[in-house]
Image (cartoon, rainbow, N blue to C red; front, side, top):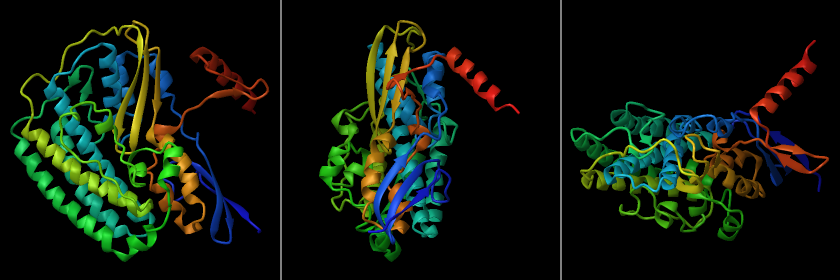
Length: 392
């Protein structure tokens, strides 16, 4: 067998963020694939150590523009656990309403991108048109379309006025009708079926072994969702169904996300009907007792984890973010094998990758086989010496 290796990325028309794939092909068929990340690092985890917990909320919100509320939800509930404080139920319900609106906006964005990757740009234009309804609702509640700044330690910053609740509920009815259209379209449109069915196969046993999360693992028939299995916010009270599909291919990932959006519409309407009447937040102390916590949340892409270590001050000693994309990269390497080079864009896109959530940096001494962390002063000195060598 004669094979050649083709680099895809870190800059490529099919990739929306920098990541590198090296695919080995025999003719048009992929026989091996390797992923390399690490092209996008902004030092947010380290920056959290220099800021107070309240300021860190707005920093972590900017880890990702699509799942910004997911990161602040995971962080604030972790800090609330360190404080051993229960958030008012109205605050938890509002937090969860925003969570599900964000899931709608994220999944619709992904559905449009998936259509674009298979050359079905009509689907992209339709979904992004309808996604504007969700963005309008987020702006109506929070004042913002991207980073909503709703979460704070102890609850949420803004209430949902009773005047806009009828508009929100009517909007969910309208949006649910559109989702039925997309479900029918994706189930019958030849372009979608030809490019997604039996493409990017991920068997359930492989998905479990590789630690896959989110819609990707549920599309392999595995019934797993943090909202039900380890409920946070108001998820322990809100009725919903975990959506799965058993064809284990890209089509299954399309179906799961559309079905999840229908569930999100139902959940939002239920929460608006049962919105508690107490306060939306508690006023809590700025200094956090010494301890550590692992906070989990089912973000649109899957299980999001924040590790927080406190030292008794008003600044965290350590904040570590494990994004769902990082958990899903090994599955992409597996899914690419055996398929054609033309299937690469949609297989990669099928996990809804986010590099700004994923990339971190670790310093490794290859000779001593040792890893270490630099403080800011050491990093500053290294930077000075590095650029001195590059001077003309």
